Length: 188
Image (cartoon, rainbow, N blue to C red; front, side, top):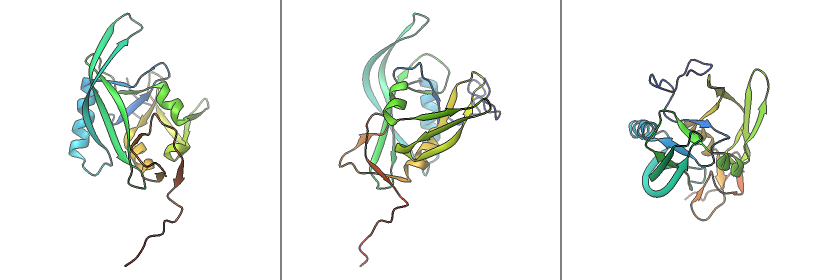
């Protein structure tokens, strides 16, 4: 399975492990253990990536179209800072089956107000909550659109969320302002 720019998902796995499939049919974010381990390994070896993570306990069950089920006991919590140094995060349930990238769910995309502009040649992605405007998305040979969380971390650092506590950036509506607005600091 190759992307239009030559990146691949499966065995050769030349796509970055920070890539997520934007899966409109996915009702809850999930990732196979193999993709989660690749993501964790990447983040561990790139300490300045703007991403960090925790593996936390969870209890969920997935029912797939082929009648298979998967019980999840762990989830990957991915963290990044916004411009105000507030911590933002998203959660991805870990399934033991499969060999695909992380899957971003429809509820995550809806909560953030993802907007897509689709043309015969390209797919454009905008999301005011994370500061992305008309970014060209890569397309897998499976025709799924993909988004790199490394790009999201970069864009998130350009947005300041006015929240007093930690919020999930993929599951909350928050007020924000762009970092281009000057922030006054006391100089001593």
